[in-house]
Image (cartoon, rainbow, N blue to C red):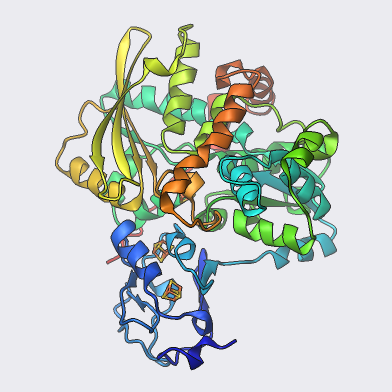
Length: 473
Ligand code: SF4
Ligand code: SF4
Ligand code: SF4
């Protein structure tokens, strides 16, 4: 059906950024995407246009932004950070994650070794989209489903989350010792895009530790490939993520091994669910329990051992709690959630975004963290930072999506926004059922790091990165 016969606009065709695409033929001009971009995320790549016309795109290249077929601004000319909140708010499917899943078939036809790397929130997003309900996990069925799609190996990005926790903790201590804090976390690629394009003055304070995906994919291409007698170009790594901005991260020139991308393709929860539906897979709690106990539903070694805390990376506050658990373990102190005092600093009027202050004692010192989620919260955070009010703060956890990655732009659409807060239940359950709570207890990962990256120089080379000033108007 061509919706243009019912609506006013005459703009046709598809336009795409790295992260998202708009199909103008499906756009009914409801402006929900523009409101998400402007009001919720405070980015303003999309501006509100008259009803029944597509959103205005704000150009950073100085071109006009009229709503006509011939003078249309292109997505790539905007300051889009790829958070995908426009796409989760579009009810017609006109705005979608930029889908390049066909590349998987191409890689398969070329005889490449297909490797999937799955993020924490993906398993709860897949469960929801496959009809299991909100707050459930379809971890084992997603692993089995990826095997059915032809992946030779399925790895858990939770392994990378443990590694990120350690490298982030080192950064926190380094900045504190130098009196140069706070350090801002770097797991969220939409935040990194925002730093580079709008707040480049913050770059010296952003942790150089790669995101969990950045670390896992680098280790796969740099070290594990050799273990299976492959070159980096023989392996096609696909991130299966809740996140549209990971598509930007995948093409960062800093994240390569021997001129080959560490992550060849990043697909979202919604895209993998489409592939599962094409395969006519049916998910249920009963099938989940069965697959958990057989190899088909289990992640492959060696990236299959991780702490409970790594699951928490999928929700706001999770990176900070992982770091606190690790620091407590290093100091041989008992971690309980009550170790962290948690106070509200700012909250959006709809209560879906916030800035919270976490304070915790460790090794005889007191630490202070700020946990920030949502685009409007980031804007508030930057105002506080510019006013010099982050002095005495050791670390700031920044996630651009409301509620963190469980609310990512590649996650299933949700009827009521408030229901997003129920998604972490599936991750918290995994955490409680885990063999060990903190990454210090992940002996196998420590052994792998020692074998593959014996010096701090090796670690820095493989697991850290740098950022560029790409300031835009
Ligand atoms: S992806 Fe985010 S920044 Fe880009 S247009 Fe959509 S809401 Fe705006
Ligand atoms: S939310 Fe979707 S249908 Fe509505 S204006 Fe945006 S792209 Fe068009
Ligand atoms: S909060 Fe998570 S899902 Fe959202 S952009 Fe950042 S990393 Fe991606």
